[in-house]
Length: 205
Image (tube, rainbow, N blue to C red; front, side, top):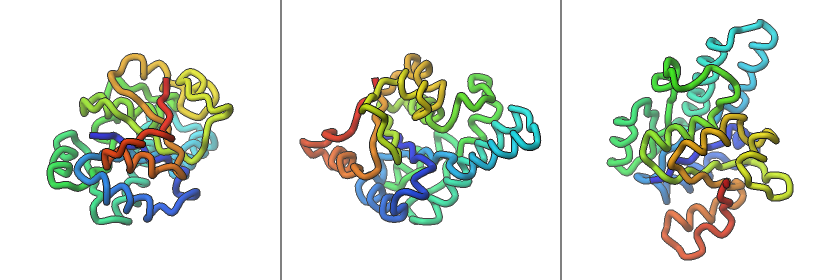
């Protein structure tokens, strides 16, 4: 099993329907999708600043923002399905489909997850992989880090990942990988068990 976090910025930077088709063609039954917040979460950030919304409310709205992107994903390919529990995810995987995590029910009142922008869909994807007992996480991103630096500390401090990611990673039995969206074929090779699988996937250390 692989948990794949789809960055919200992919809405603007790739052929999203084609990317989803590729993932479904090769990963159905083996891949769980975590949607980023993208433009939907950006609107929450804007509203919090403009209206002085409290952190708890903004946190809940940001989780719904992830679900908005998730709803978009499920509308673009019939093999993608909303799943708000671990059981639902396994049910879709067993049917050789792809579950898309709708996180609100599992996260909104979870005392282990602080209501802060330090924890975004990046760190939540780590949390979900751990909850699924899945050792592999792919962060499908629209950018490549400066100087090709894939240190978790650098990525968190430089804003490529959220601030909590590096510290959360030390507590998880999960191996995270960075994957630039234009190199998705390397991940597809991995799903297809080809020898050159991880050539362009970068392990976050």
